[in-house]
Length: 268
Ligand SMILES: C[S@@+](CC[C@H](N)C(=O)[O-])C[C@H]1O[C@@H](n2cnc3c(N)ncnc32)[C@H](O)[C@@H]1O
Image (cartoon, rainbow, N blue to C red):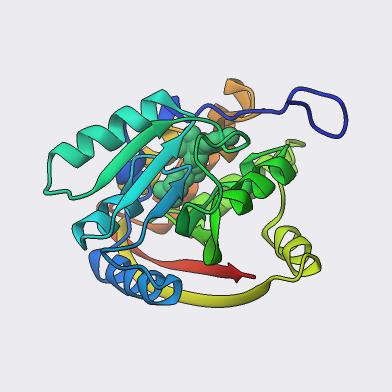
């Protein structure tokens, strides 16, 4: 399937970060609990409903749902991510979870199957997001709820991560996601008559400076590996490391980082 410009749609390969995805996108337990309770009650999920985790990654949300006895299907385009999700599943008690390998633009499910669909951190990655969105709405039950939005990872708001991103732009490597900005997708859904409820959450966590540096070194966010030459990454890292050592005598010291979550609940 091609995008409106007639080009093949871009697919960002998450296989390279699958191994460490859960560590680098970890959510503190109390925060995850707060988010999950909100998701379950707003989407009306129970043991008798079925939920789809679209672009489920390594399964951090799907696991929490199935631990609460909510039947869930996870689908992802990355084999590496799905393998990780299955491995993560084996290490805990899971009920009623299924994994499918597939693309959001061609979902192998019947119309109206899911009471809730989670599409967290997804549509900004898809250049053909309109096709993916209409596929998503096709498999959503009438009266069901689609959740889009984001939940930041532990080091996302660190001053070092922000410095990295700022230097990337200053060096001429402006970062643009291939897909849609969250506000644009919400506007498009409103135009189609959707009702949107926004729920925002925030917490703060102490993160050792060394850990943030390690994640940056590993280029764990797509904005750090996509369309950025290795040599520029190395130059930015030198500056980031210098800033870390000038502000913290000991790299084991912790920085208090805020984690934000912005959940958009969409229903028709
Ligand atoms: C940023 S990760 C988010 C993972 C998960 N939703 C979470 O919040 O932990 C995006 C995921 O979407 C998957 N993905 C990207 N494009 C996709 C597509 N066209 N169809 C299905 N999954 C896709 C990626 O492989 C990756 O696992």
